[in-house]
Image 1 (cartoon, rainbow over the protein chains, first blue to last red):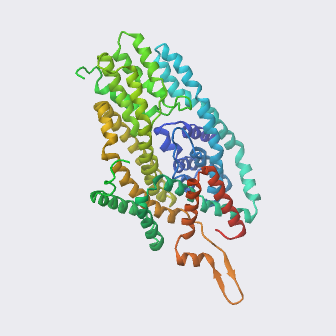
Image 2 (cartoon, rainbow over the protein chains, first blue to last red):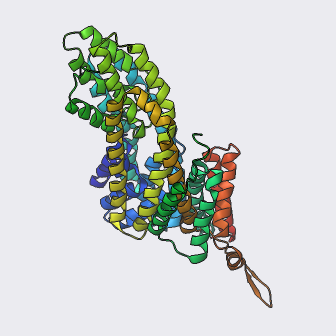
Amino acid sequence: MVQALLMALVALLNGIQGPYMWYMFREPVMAGFWVGLIYGDPVMGTVIGATINVSYLGWISAGGANASDLYWAGLLGTFVAIQGGMSLDTAVAFAVPIGLLGNYVHVAYMTLASVWPTRMDILASRGDWKGIRRLQILGGPAFVLILRALPVFLIALYGGGLIQQMIDALPVWAMNGLSAVGKMLPALGMSMLFKFMYKKELLPFFVLGFVIAAYTGLSDLLMFAAVGVCLALLMIKLGFGKEKGVE
Amino acid sequence: MANKVLTQKDVRKAALYWHATSHMTYNYQRLQAGCMASMMGPIFDKLYPDNPEKIKEGLEREMLYFNTEPRWGAIIPGMTVALEEAYAVDPDSGIDGNTITEIKTALMGPLAGIGDTVWAGLMKPIFLSITLAWAMDGHVWGAWAYWLLAFGFDLGITYYMFMRGYKLGTDSIERFLEGGFVKTVTTALGIIGLFCLGAMIVKYVTVDAVLVWETTSSTLDFGALINQIIPSFLPLVFTMFAYWLQVKGKKVTTVLLALFIIGFVGGAVGFLG
């Protein structure tokens, strides 16, 4: 019961929009940490959350559109993985479909919260900006409470045993399939990022990064970032990307 | 603008309010308008101390549709504060309510584009790609390192852009958008991003061929064979396949489903693992 209440609290913070929540509660790696903490293993939670997070590296929300729901993939994905005692790859295979489900919740939220501006218009015509401020701060979170915290509370309260049974009932071939899915799905995050970053003249840098990592087996990304920064500074210094002016 | 009514403190408060609440009641109807209007509330109080009609008018004006990227785009609400102040101090300055709305509306699209590219497309993935590796190795501080980087830069950029927007006014924003600065930043981050992305595919996409062909005389391990020719070949192929589907106009959900099915069937029959 206490754990389910704490899960509901994390779900509320995870769903409220804004930079104070986005990085500390929404990002799957942090959501995983909190869920792990609630169930007594923050390290495991962090590892699961981080593994799920990889599939969401290219997650971009533009104009409120939401490709796939980051919020629940990390939160409930970690919960399901811990309850079912899953391998990391299997956890990813479960988290991403949960994220798709969460996507509908996001659409419902954005639609329901559309009632507030209409009310704000009335307040504006009265000059009551304090009323608008109250609605701006409480209006969205009120729907998060109903749409996200409440379902998570119920799932945390009643879902644990069910998930365990479900996982135990899965045949070996299905587990193998899900495990392969988990290793495959990060390709989606990478492809979204690639689509976003791709520019013809920058392609050699992508090939360079891939080839170095693939052939040498070096995989410390801090090192790659440092080399990348040096490459970028050198190229800019040499006037790369300047000649065409503004796109 | 000889007459400044607002103090540094007023503007700073507005910047921090924008940072904290821009998305708190995000919705399809008006996106960030509720934040814009309620952010301007205390400022209108100060600009029109005994003219409630002007306050109402201002609030209604700021309740109009508004949406941009909240960090780099913070230059727009900052600028809005400056414009509303100029309009209040001297109503004949050439700036009126319509001008303010027009300028905001003209700028929010381009800045959303730039902001999303730089933040969501480049900075955040780079932060994640470094810190997730630590977190996956079982370091809880890796998760918090991500928080520190992302929140720190979010706050820093938002605050800087907001204050800059207030200080510079409109013409300078156009210079900012047209100048080489944006191009240089996106090129530099693009180089870092794509270089890291190449390495990330090798590190994070770990799907491999596990098919082993056994004949009486010899064993043929397809996975080992592929990796001998081109290491991490399958991760690259699947990433490019997913990219290709998206370029073809397929929805992300469809691509996800495709990868899911290929992975599941491949794993179940013992080709992939």
